[in-house]
Length: 88
Image (cartoon, rainbow, N blue to C red; front, side, top):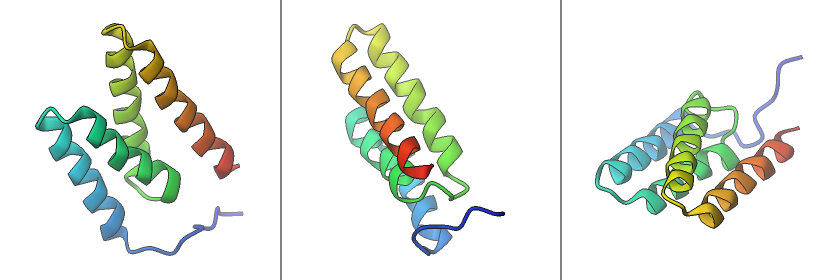
């Protein structure tokens, strides 16, 4: 049985959020970009942008870890895990 979207939302919202995340990341506003990417994952997990948002968040968390910002990286991983649990 196909997974049903929890919140019927126009595809444009998740696409717009993803673009905002990319733009913020390109401007060096990494923490702000996380907010956009995590919002897609948490609120629109069935959107076509969700897998790419997960990849972006994982890459950002890994970069934070490599910079020694372990606590921040762990919080990001925790939010990803929480979003995945809600999906199940």
